[in-house]
Length: 136
Image 1 (cartoon, rainbow, N blue to C red):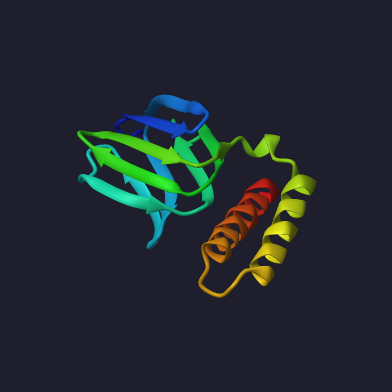
Image 2 (cartoon, rainbow, N blue to C red):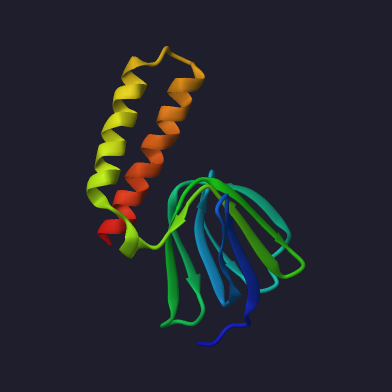
């Protein structure tokens, strides 16, 4: 079933990784999964690491391993500002597993409630999500 399309941009610190019209955006906010269709109510949300799916059509889906960031929906457009947006085919599983192990070790060594501990927890969530996206 064809849906109305709307413009979506995905930006990372390295630059623009996606700029096109889609029928739906599927991602995860800090309060749960969300799907955005055309003419969605204005929204601002914090994003969690997950698989970002951009549906150009039912059969044409652009996928990314998405890091944490922000989502803004306004005037029938969506903007995602994310730390990472990586093509799942380009994920290096062994490197991510190594980074995950380092983050777990950093969390063990960090003082309770410290910024280092919070950073390690965020890294663990990101690397676990990326391994899940890379495995699907």
